Image (cartoon, helix red, strand yellow):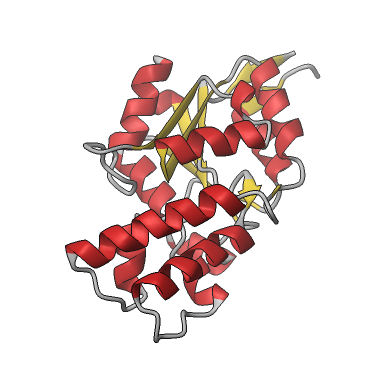
Length: 225
């Protein structure tokens, strides 16, 4: 017998459910080469710590020009390259399927909240067999806010019909934790993703886990005795 500690669990995608580091880095590097051909793009580690932020912010944080034309070329090239190469090296993290299956079977409502464009979020979750677990997938579209703004989390809660106090957000970055906190939602940071544990601790999440399966007892309590 189980009881729900949280009626809903919201998840980030990259660095939380899928290990997409190589494919994301390759797409960013390709897009950077396109906008500034005579400059060698940054190493993977420098790019990876920016993942989770909007593409235009990544461009700026990496020290590239951010005028409107350059940003548009970067975004378009990145999305085109990612669409063609997103599953070359990407894999589900260990335990993700078992975790989602358990939460779903226990009656937890599930949503995905990502900074990916909606179209890319949709084809990514479909390709990796995740779509059927989620009641709602929230990606970015024109007119929507990005994490760390609370709007993506609030929208997901509205679609699930759940109050902030009854939900938890699971993610691997400051964008996830700050967005959830601003929306009044509990937070769980995962240390196996794209940010180091020491950095995640500095954000003061409500929970910190090192394995996907460790999320289960946070959300669902076993009261079977």
